[in-house]
Image 1 (cartoon, one colour):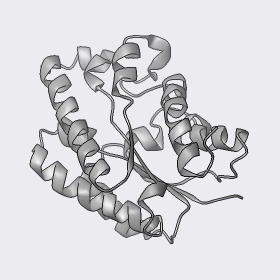
Image 2 (image 1 turned 180 degrees about the vertical axis):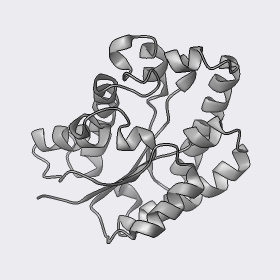
Image 3 (image 1 turned 180 degrees about the horizontal axis):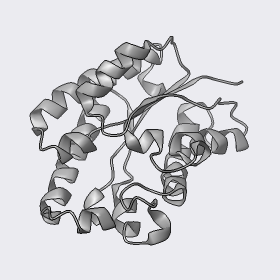
Amino acid sequence: MGSSYLALGDSYTIGEAVAVDGRWPHQLAAALRAQGIALGDPQTIATTGWTTDELDAGINDVAPQGPFDFVSLLIGVNNQYRGRPLDEYQVQFQALLQRAIGFAGGRADRVLVLSFPDWGTTPYGAGSGRDLGQIELETDEFNAAAEVISTQQGVAFVDITDISRDTGADPAMIAEDGLHPSARMYALWSARALPVAAHLLGRTD
């Protein structure tokens, strides 16, 4: 069984269009186990399309029973996609991060935040008719806000947005829906998060 893990998010955490073991939190847990860290597969609270407030409501519905040994949070792309304001995101993200820390037994050093990818680089984005430069700008603004808030709270922040931009046009890195990452891209996210997560869980090699 190992240590407990709670993964909070949206389509990128639930792994829309990939198998369960292809989701980045599951790949991360497996990679940590391979390093000798006994972390169980995550309890996941995530749904495709969720914004920050919808994730908050989803957490209320599930009422997960902590404390958890490790918590991850990845949220915000749907706020950006729907044109929701940045200042609203900042307030709601901070509240969610506080909840995540609470689920980790008050230990900010057991929480990991991932940035969200630039969906404008995907085939779906290219065909969306949206201003791709604006998507890029807003993606950076939202992620920068999340990083500032995470740092202020003593929470580790892992930026994977550049991976999405470097690989978003590669069919092997995108699921069949043309929008969401494939398990191969999630593996890159997991690999980037792995040393940070291992450090948080008490192993630094």
